[in-house]
Amino acid sequence: GFIRHYTWELAYGMRTLMRVTYGQPRLPKIHVLEAEFRGAAEAAFSGLGREGQEHLWSMAHTATQQSHGTILVIHGGAADEAVRLSSQGAPIDPIKLDADGLLSLSSIDGAILMDEHGACHAFGVILDGIAMTEANPARGARYNSALRYVRASEAPCVAVVVSEDGGVEVVAICDADSD
Image (cartoon, rainbow, N blue to C red; front, side, top):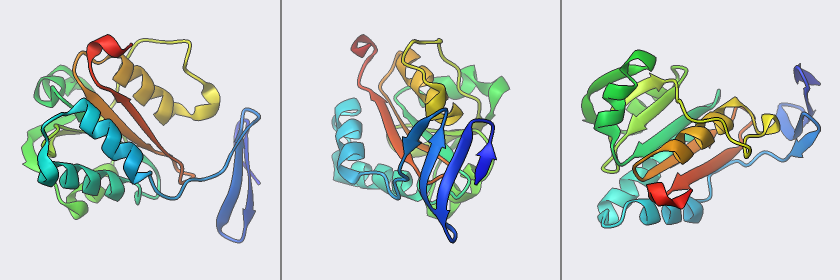
């Protein structure tokens, strides 16, 4: 059936088999690939330690369970970013989230901004960034916003983008010179 402008999907019962947006077919991914996320997080944030890596993976995996989609941004300068983006989101005193806390905050439209130690600094954040040729309307607003934000970041940054259709993408930059 037709979902919205230039978007339709093929489904069997309640299960989406394929979604086509702007003529680009995509199969839904159920879970973020753990190896892809762990590799990106390790490259971006060296020295996390096993416990830190486990917590970040737990948060990323939990984000994939948000039924309406979300963006989880792990940023090396999250405290400063929460202040900079305070007019575009809800900054909070840093708090280490558990799965229930992440699901609650991610139910609010906008991104969740946390540091590499897993402390949340803001939620409901509208991401900014510089327009780029790599942007693709077929990939959706969440993905393109995350891509622009991560690529414009001056600090290590990893974003997990969860689409409403169940697709999951990991967007990462290890340092500002990676553009």
